[in-house]
Image (cartoon, rainbow, N blue to C red; front, top):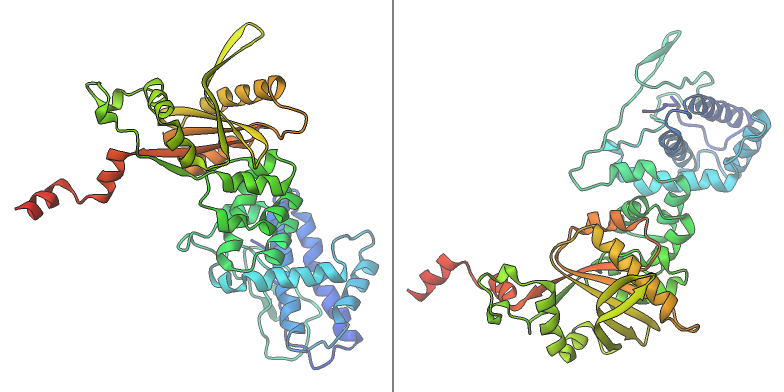
Length: 400
């Protein structure tokens, strides 16, 4: 919820009276917003900036104020509110761009804003009132308050939108050009608690175009963003291990196949496995043993990647992803960096290869880990065939 500035059009060319009245309207909104800032700091700031952005957009884009109006407004605001920060000419223009980036969703926007309705009189109201949830009357006039709501019908990331900073929003509308891209980066910034600089790097590296990659924390844990992007591109989110057919393994129930049996099959087909991952991988060993401070550690599969200049650990898990897998993998990576990593090599990278994984959940639990890790899934031949073949009843009908 937020404030609404009741305002009319300004006649062509803003004179000093127009500027003074504009400043008073914005000033009132700022003061009222600051009074509630302790309750909803970020929400309130975005609400205020969106409303001011709309106000400025509607009175500058059509030439009502002429040139130089924004600079004059900024200067006078600073004079009337000493110590005010964030309202430079450039920042006010960014507020305008913020509004214009999202105005298409305004009819059902949860982003509370400062409404600027079109009045019938060509004057800027000098006693504009800022309100929150009800109609507030001043003499014979009333300032209409409109509560805006945004639904989830189009998957708009409401929570993320309201909980990232204005600086994050600026980075997004500056560098992400499409509506879907912007929604993606809003959610990404919120989920991964990205710093603005890191968010900008991810946008410039076209992370959106590589969004089908495996869930990972590479951008957070690898300082070199170019290397982080190469690491993202090195791995898929899902692998088809078509040379592993559990029905050929002597067990009563294919679901009883454990990681060691799968690992044995992979080792027997290690050339195929490397080709599945990519030609840059060199096989170093399986069940690689390390004794660290009296504790035994056994790495399922160990590789070296020439392009990344990194050791790569692949841990096999037969079922659903579990957060505990990351703790185990982080320990392996620390040991490798201490024991094996050479001075000219990059930090070791770890991959959990499991049967199923909820991507959003994986990204959530990865946030607090400081070692580069990702989680991919695999399919075996008979499962892939089941996806490709029609249902059993349909097969019978076709045969008959």
